[in-house]
Amino acid sequence: MRPSKFDNRRDRMLKAAYGRAIAPLALAVATSTFAAPATEPEVREFIDSAGARAGELGVKATRAEWVFQNFITHDTQQMAVEASKALTTEGGSNAREARDYLASPGLSPATRRDLELIRHSVSVPSPADARSIAELVEIGAELKSIYATGKYCAEDGECSVLRDMELRMANSRDSDELLELWQGWRQVSPPMRDLYSRQVELANKGARDLGYVDLGDYWRSRYDMSGEAFSADMERYWQEAKPLYEALQCHVRDRLEAFYGEAVMPDDGTIPAHLLGNMWAQGWSNIEDVVMEGAFEAPYDLTRILEEREMDEEAMVKMAEGFFTSLGLEPLPETFWERSLFTRPEDRDVVCHASAWDVDAKDDLRIKMCIQRTGEEVRVVHHELGHNYYQRAYNEQPYYYRGSANAGFHEALGDAIALSVTPAYLVELGLLDQLPETSEANTIAQLMNLALDKVAFLPFGYIMDKWRWQVFAGELTPEEYNAGWWKLRREYQGISSPVARGADAFDPGAKYHIPANVSYSRYFQAHLLQFQFHREMCEKAGFKGPLYACSAYGSKAAGEALNAMLSAGRSVPWQQTLADFTGKDDVDVSAMLEYFAPLKSWLDEQNRGRQCGWEA
Ligand code: X8Z
Ligand code: ZN
Image 1: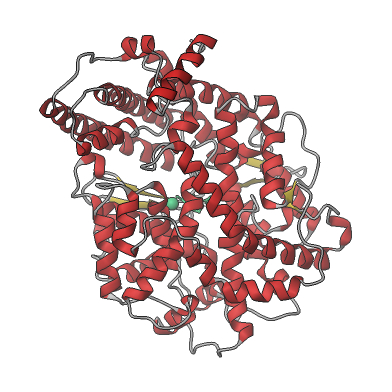
Image 2 (image 1 turned 90 degrees about the vertical axis):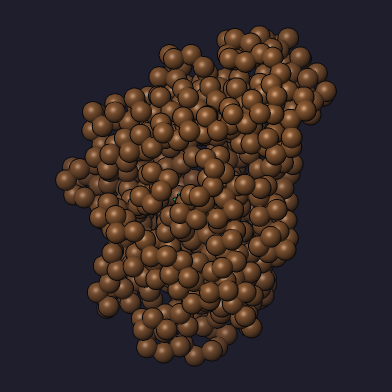
């Protein structure tokens, strides 16, 4: 059913009256199992039983999904779809029921919040009917499968999987080869476009049934504040971080031009997307050699250390676990080592995009990741274990509190820990023989390596959802998807497409989280939050000195404070959880700015006299 003009007008009236859009009444009645107001005990009973039912189906769906993602075949896909249908049916009906109960007068604030959590507990809401549920779930599995099994076959018939193409993009300095890889991977996504737009249509309808304007409104409203306030905060954080990004973009552009020559560089101030060492130009640390050439050298190379010490994938995971246990947290369970996937199997298709799993909400923790033995991946391994340690910490909570304070916290934890992988820490582990000498060059090199990942990421982290918010709101038609994508890439990142993109291209689909339908604001927030977490852990550890030199390794005090935050799960609004940990109830960009302050001054110096900025 398409919303009529009348629905829209009534929505606006209701919105004016209640501060947020309410589902059209007819729809609410049609999909509701509850009409009369309920008492507090009745609602509490619903909350408990909904959690028990969803929990049980969740374990089944997670197991089926694990098997599907580890062995992608027609049959495993169908089995995952079946389990997911059951969960989507249950989750959706609970969410709609929670929406109805919210109309009951006299409920306690705590119960109202619990109902809001249930209303928000589905990531991709479906309309209530079984046909829509089946279609939505099938599309979701199909999109994931297209991405995970995608291959690019070159003219000579040689076919490559994404992981190998990523590795070549990281290491090649031949712009023709880079362009081929960049275009090659983008051949995988055009078949996704129509499936994607149908998915959007169905999920929007599901979101409207829950009382939201569209899926974007639903996603934005999960942050213990209104969706409008959330968007405004995201923009404010970005504005605060932007001068640092612009300084980095300007310098990197200059260095790339010096390396590749003027011919490859557009004269509008943007950087072509294929030269940044990463398939999506979201993190640029793989080209640190180009960026630093002639100025200074990285004082050490973690990738080389892994090679020299013959550290394999499992050893990398052990190293990350060692950090968590040094803070006083328990070692991972034996089953983690038995059941996780660390390397890409050659004989079958798997979802290689790294993920961390909590299968039974007890202690069946696992990661699934096609680990590459690089310094960059050391960070990703810490990232994934951060998820597992968070999951374990909140497992004692009631069902709907089992989650991070907000999605950004989950993404920030492991990254915050990885910020403690400093030269001094590597010396302590015996991976570096001695501390690099203290010099401006070494400090800048260390900060540059990290900024190329963390600072470069920010506008990418922001536009992934900005694009989807436009799509969900119907501001971009499928024919306009790609042009809308590049408009944002250009405006926020100062990055342009190296070649004109055809009308049927679907470049957003070449990034995992679009076909997998995972919201992305969480990563943007996490890239800021992790510096806040790091600053706090360093303070708890009693560290004196610049933030970039701090490692909280071995600090039980930091571990204790951290664990208190993790085990709270989402039992209280995230602002409160953050305030309990850091004393401040908002994302604070100043931690990241403080961390990179020496680099910012250095970049400003380098950029003096250069033409910075770009035509949006
Ligand atoms: O997807 C991830 C994690 C899994 S939650 C590996 N990340 C984002 C990405 O790869 O695009 C981590 C940082 C950003
Ligand atoms: Zn993650």
